Image (spheres, protein in one colour):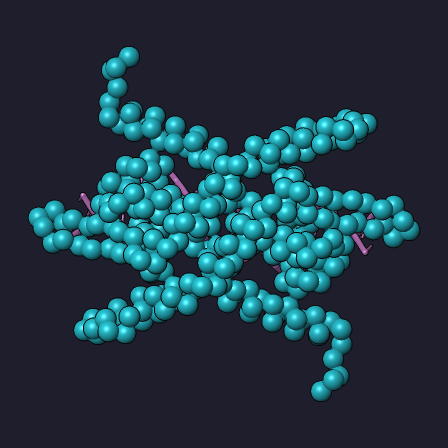
Length: 142
Length: 142
DNA sequence: CAGTATCCGTGCTGATACTG
DNA sequence: CAGTATCAGCACGGATACTG
């Protein structure tokens, strides 16, 4: 059983790593909040219960498809609760669940870090993008 | 100038929102750490300076292309520093910058939250995926 | 109002092959 | 060793049209 080439070993390691990645809680969490609209929707719902159209209005860039998809996803993950009132035009309300409220502080942390450091990141990007042809520039601007 | 249809108003709001989104620090940050390998690479480098092949070995699932791309991206964002030693086979080392080290606690927060709540999320997903056909089930399981 | 259905472009991601 | 280059798949996201 120890008869295994290095290539086979690598294969196995990779497969194991892939399996690990699929189960990696962090990676799963990033899949949840890493997409374009989740954080925005969560942030809006953190302000209070909202109806579908209210969320839509708060996020002028979102299409109906993406909003529904995001909301469904968050509902499936147990972060958002959906309740339907069967009135004449049906009324659907979205609220943060307990779990959903528990993620808000984390979102706030992320937003705060972003706010505090994004300037530095953008400065770095400009340096990286803008100075490839002028190699002599000293780093005193940093 | 106030002559504007509701549709035009919406158009403008949407354009403004899109512009806002592009500059939104949080959204930018998610673009940085939200992709597949950034957090893993950052985490590995948080353990210490690593050479290209060392990072590659630590992350058996990553292809050379993606590793280079991720590393370049992080370098551009000023989170990682790349230093080349022109020895016979060139030696390239990657280290976290000061800014890179400042993001580590945030990454840790994310990982901790994920670790503490992923079970609940997965339970919710199983409930959501597994009970569509049995509608009569009361909610006492929640 | 609150969605669903469909089509489609872009970009992220990866496999493979090649290089100084 | 540390990449680069090219090709290809597919999921993400969006525009548009339609529905109970």
